[in-house]
Structures are given as C-alpha cells and as structure tokens.
View: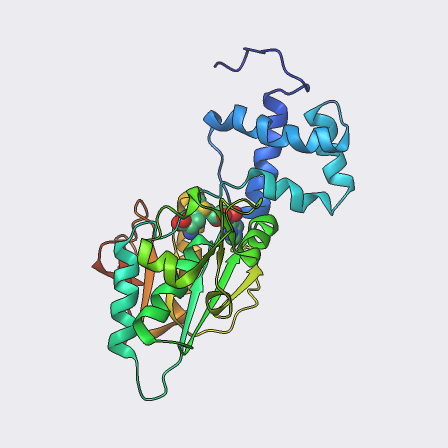
Length: 281
Ligand SMILES: C[S@@+](CC[C@H](N)C(=O)[O-])C[C@H]1O[C@@H](n2cnc3c(N)ncnc32)[C@H](O)[C@@H]1O
C-alpha cells in the first residue's frame, strides 16, 4: 500500500497519525516501527478507539495526551507479545547445564527474564530449575515486561492446551494441571504452584532510567525484544545489563539478536549465548 491509498476504515487514520503514534511509542518504549507497520498500528489502536467511543486516531492521540492513564493501554496495544513454551529449546539445555554445574555450597540462583510476555518463558525456566535441582530449588526468577496485561496472564498461569504444545508429555504430567473434561476448563492448562512460587512477575520498562531490580543475576534471558530497538538503544541496554551479571553469568539473546560487535562487553560461547567480558585494569 502507498501513502496515498485510503481504504475504507471504521475510523479516520492517515500517515500523520501513524507518524505521531510511532514517535510516541519510540519515546516511551524504544520500539521502532517501520513504515510497513502502518496498518498494524491502525488495527491495534482501533480496539482502544472502540472502547473509548472515539471517531478518529487523531482524536485518540489528543485523548492520550490529556489522559496519562491511557498510556498503559496504548503501550499494551502496540507491543508484540509472541512467545511460546521452550521457544529456542537449546537455551533451556544451557540453563539446565549451568544450574547443575554451579549448584552446591549453598549457592542461590537469581535469574532475570527481561521480556517475559505472557509467561511461557519464565515457566519454562522454572520447569528446568526443578528438573535440574529438585524440589524447592534455590532459584528465583524475576520476570519483567513493559506490558502490564501480558504479565497478568503470566501471574494467572493458565493457558490453552494449544499453547502448551511445546511442553513435553512428561513435563505436562509433572508441572501442569489439565482442566476437567466436561467443564469449561477442559481445554485449559494451569501451571502448578511449585512453578509460580519461583517466579515474580513485575512491570519494567527496559527504557526507563531506574530498574527496580536486585542484581547480580546468574543468567539474563533477554530474548526477542532487542530486535524492536534501534542499534544505539540495544547497545545502551547491553551496557546496563552486562554489569548486572555475576562473573560466571550468562546473557541469553534471541535467535536473530547478535552482539558480536560488542566484543568489549560480551563474548559468544554458544548459539546466542554470551558471557560478560570483565576489564582487568
Ligand atoms: C516478542 S516478545 C518476546 C517474548 C519472549 N522473551 C520470547 O522470546 O518468547 C517481546 C516482549 O518485549 C516486550 N517489550 C517491548 N518493549 C519493551 C520495553 N521497552 N521494556 C520491556 N519490555 C518490552 C513486549 O511487551 C513483549 O512482551
């Protein structure tokens, strides 16, 4: 579609509105939206316009400027939350190995899942922790995201059976509760409390100057979020995160995120797995 095409729409929307929306989104979240996201921005915001009974995106943007509390809905509407259980499975093997190799002598593990979305990633981490270290493992997982709505989903820990396809049968048996047949919950799966006990879900904007966190972390899972940021933002975030790792800690990135150009900060040791580079002087 070109900038002049104007298909029939329920709400008025043009390139100026798109520019204003993406500028605001970038300022608040660091997310860069390409021109190709023009239609996506409209369809995501249309839900908010309907809820607020507004007629145009321009009117919505004015509403947003006057109502600070709407910003949360704006951000929630525009984030992309795609995730799944055991996505990029080799990272969970790396996690299991790390926990087994470093366990003992009273060591507690602190893990940060920095873009937790609806929770599938931190629950996968919790399952691995229980498998590697046994019941009540000395592990805490802080699961953060900018989107308050997806975090609430994570706290509830209930997923459709369809979304649990990445969980093996053995893990489903051990860590999940299936809704009873013949009830409205029959196609739903609930994470067992022993997993939830290891995880704290908390809203955190990676772009904000202050992070309410308690480093050091043994492992930071920061997967498939950096891709939404421009290079300078990625670099700044990496510069803040790497010093939060223990000396033997790991930074785990998403499959299309590469930091080989940040060799003064991190060193690649496995597929998209990095260790911190510590200055010796
Ligand atoms: C595509 S999901 C990735 C989820 C998961 N890490 C995975 O790899 O499956 C990206 C997540 O990053 C979050 N996000 C985007 N911008 C953010 C920011 N500035 N601070 C914190 N989280 C952000 C989104 O809300 C979304 O849930």
